[in-house]
Length: 174
Image (cartoon, rainbow, N blue to C red; front, side, top):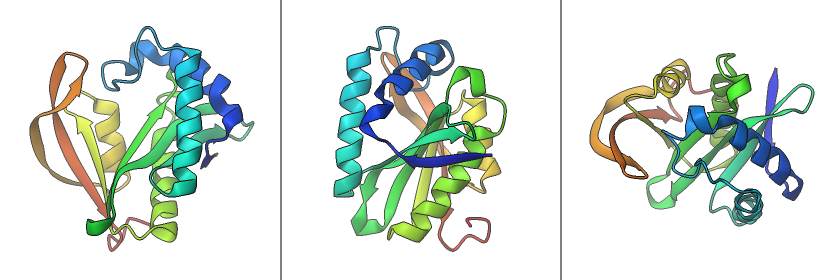
């Protein structure tokens, strides 16, 4: 059993530890996860996300275990209010992967989004080579819409992406 909650300023050390642990497993997929990732980057990001949540410009959440261990993050960004659409993303620290945590957190985030925001459409974009992320999108009922060629750039690597959508009206969404 896990839970999600918005970031708090006190989360910077836990975020830093989880990212540093996970560079080998996440850096190919997430541009912000890199070998030189610093504690200052964690502090700056957490501060920006606390403020963004208050403003309603992004919604980032911490994924926590029953024992309050920091397991990763999920959230909504690239908010498009005019079209009632947002991007949904997730990541799980290396030592907690393969346990269904991203799937469970994503389901919780979808519930939260459809209960607390005006968004009708949530989009998940995953690199074609990121099998774990593709599986999560499928498990939460994401509708595979298509392949987007050269859509994702991580440092100097350009990758194809698969776009999934979850609609408020989807029976599996809640």
